[in-house]
Image (cartoon, rainbow, N blue to C red):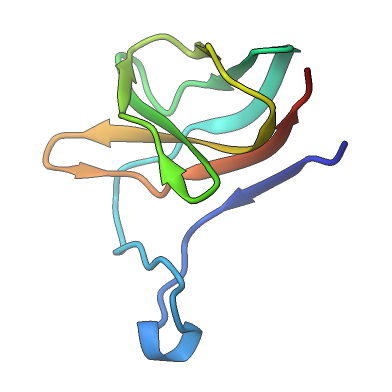
Length: 112
């Protein structure tokens, strides 16, 4: 099992990186210290430090190139459940008035 944590904050043209996802520059602070806090055979739990008091966060995951629906929370922790075995990348970003932060992604394997 391996684990990668990464922050997306590229400011290049799509032509320079092919299909790279480009995020616009933002003043919305990203969540800090995003980490996996637990895992079962069908769930992944995350926690993070708040970007600011009262912040709202948007979370989602991808598996096999397919994205989940967005989940919104004001908590600094969340558990994705009902997952099946596979390689997931889970994302967290702060939602501010009129914009969102860069997103943080964690790649994990869910094993059954």
